[in-house]
Length: 63
Image 1 (cartoon, rainbow, N blue to C red):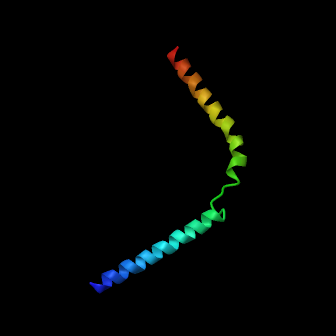
Image 2: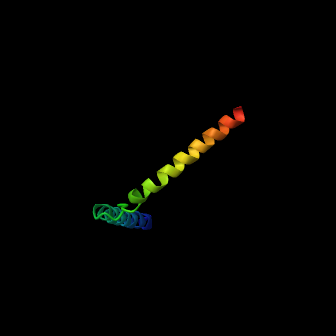
Image 3: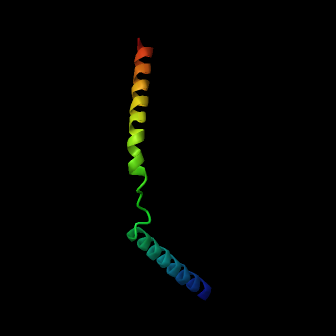
């Protein structure tokens, strides 16, 4: 039974360590994405064109 208490306490300390590492990474900007916003404008027109093409195709089928 004492092994279970030992394993639970060790796992809690490991979880706290990972949580602290995660908080430090977020605060230091590790997960900031600087690349995607600059490229996003290049792909917006493509999705609009595809949606417009799909609408015209469905309109042609209805006629």
